[in-house]
Image 1 (cartoon, helix red, strand yellow):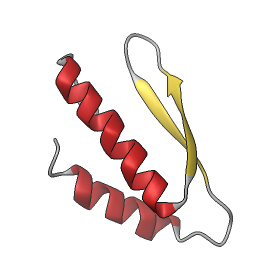
Image 2 (image 1 turned 90 degrees about the horizontal axis):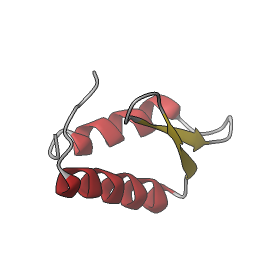
Image 3 (image 1 turned 30 degrees about the vertical axis):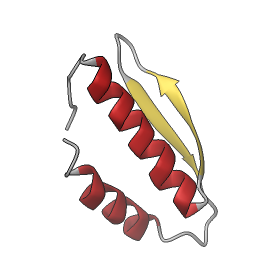
Length: 66
């Protein structure tokens, strides 16, 4: 689901959340621009990482922001 909100404070909060969450997990990442004004997050994880668990934890915490 795509979230659309051009409020600069909301955008800053989302970027801060992503940076803090992934940093705490020791996950390297970078942001990729999407057509229009969107962003995509590219995660750099190894094959040993439980990707489902990582995504589940991320989404559980993200729900509080959105």
